[in-house]
Length: 192
Figure (cartoon, rainbow, N blue to C red):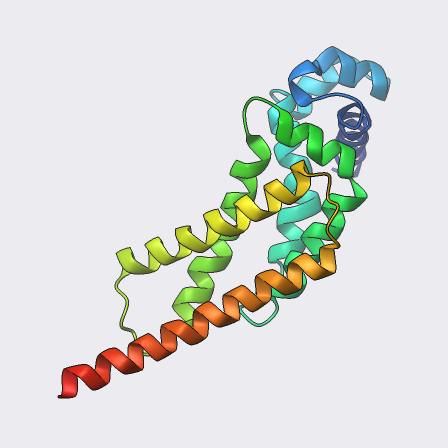
């Protein structure tokens, strides 16, 4: 198993190296294996295609570290970690986003939807939201946050990642406060 992980990491590094130079659509499995110094059969032993390799990279580099101890209390730090990772792999991330299949945004949405589903369930202290409403709230925040992050990347990641993470945290806290105030207002109105 250790050798399999070493090979997967080597293939991943090759895709990152190539992805820093050109968009994913222009990279072939042959390019990856040539860069890595392995044959195509070795690649296909581990991955079905370059998209599965890309998913493995995202899982190892993003999903596992970001969701390991994810909570509503620490999500701003996790978003900052995400932005720092993206900046450290800037060319690779931007070229991944530019690919025609929109793989990065879809993957990011999967990570964020899990975060917000959990956060909204934990935050819904009064249990006033049904499952469908929670799902709508989670998708709303996910798509907004994902859009901001993808736009930030496509604009060259010029805004400081700490500043951007802080802005997103402020928006979430203000939304949380407004939701709480709306709930109290609604309950008071029902009691009249």
